[in-house]
Image (cartoon, rainbow, N blue to C red; front, top):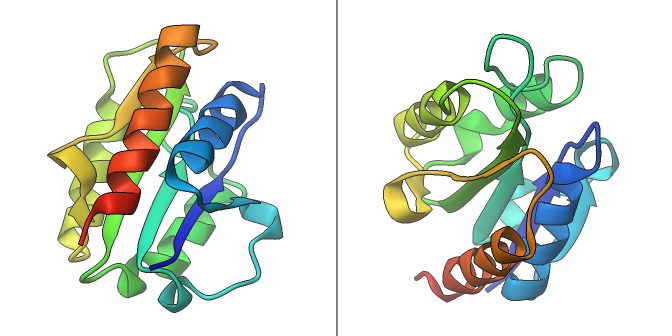
Length: 137
């Protein structure tokens, strides 16, 4: 069973989370701009993107990538994570709805969020999140 962690990060906060998720999952780690593989090659996927603008996914790289893979998520277990600096997590709830609407099973039924720079506790939660993702059947 193969797991991929694919992320976008502007400030490095979501990148820290991605590294911890990948460590916990024993997963392949990719910046979204560097992912050249196929989603079909992975059994489980963790996707990371911070809240941007009016609580939405980053629109230049990550949103187009997510749109391009939405049709391939059916039947996959997906973990969603990211950091935010304002708002109440609306971007994550919308993202979870999109992923489940595409037929994915979202780990825990919700995404994993960290406010601003992830604390040591947040990074431990990311490792645990990754480990649980890797164990999903």
